[in-house]
Image (cartoon, rainbow, N blue to C red; front, side, top):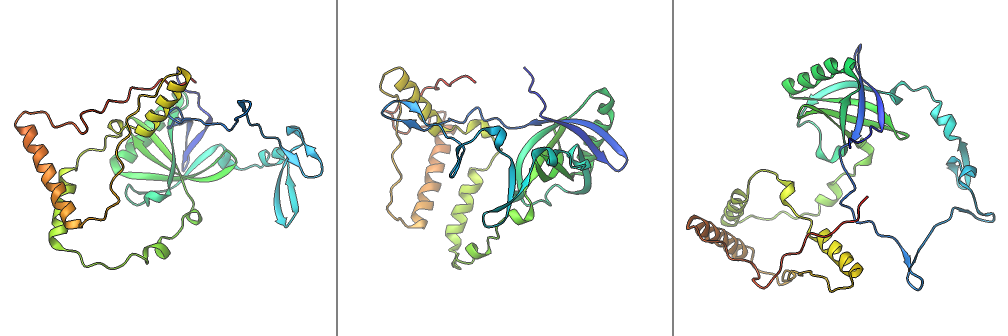
Length: 289
C-alpha cells in the first residue's frame, strides 16, 4: 500500500508553480518502543496533564502560550496561528541554488520525498529535476511545516526529488571551544603510512544495507525469548581490552591481519571464523504495526 502524503502545496521558482506532495523518507519501523511499567502490577505508567492547584485538565482546556516574563504568558489559540496569512505555509519558495558540496553536513536534519501532484505538475517537475541534475545544483527554499518555519534543500534523487529540512544557523554549536583542547601531536610518518594503508584497504562503496544493527537484533531476541518462555539465543561478544597498547604495534598488527585475509581469499580458502563456538543470532520476530 502506497504511503499517504502528509503535506501538499506548490514548489515555486519565479513565476513557475508546480503542485507537489511530500512523503517521509524515513520510517520508525526498526525502533524498539519501550514503555515504563509498574513492576508490581505489570501495568503501563500513564501521564496526566495537571495544573498546580487545579488538578487534571482536559485537552480542550489547553492552549499555547509564550512566557515573556517569569510566570507570565501570552496565550495563543491554535486557530489564531492557523489563520496567519503566510504564503509559505503552502508554498516552497526556491530562493537560491548552490553547489552540491556547498552545504555543511551538520545542517541536514530530516529527508522527505517530493512528488508531483497530478498530471498537470509532471512536466514542470521533470524539467526542474533535470535542470538541477544537469547543473549539479541544490535548490534552497523556505517552508512552514508542522508549525515551524524551515529552510529546505531540494536535490535530484533517482528519477525524483529529495527535500531535506535544514537546521538554522543558530541551532549549531561552534566546535572551536572543544577542538582547541586537541593537542598538537608530532605524527610519526611510518604510523601515518600504516593508517593510510588500512584506510585504503577498507575503502569501498557505502552499503548501509550490509551493516546489521546487532544491538536491536539482540534486544528483539531477548523480547521473543521472554514471550516464548525460553533462554535467549544471544551470543555476547568479548569486550575490547582496556589495556593501552602502542599505536605503532597496533597498526602493524592490523595491516598484517589484512594481508593474511587477502592471501587466504586469493588461495581460495575460507577465512577463519571469529569464535568458532559462536552461533549466529536468529532474525528476531518483530511486532507488526
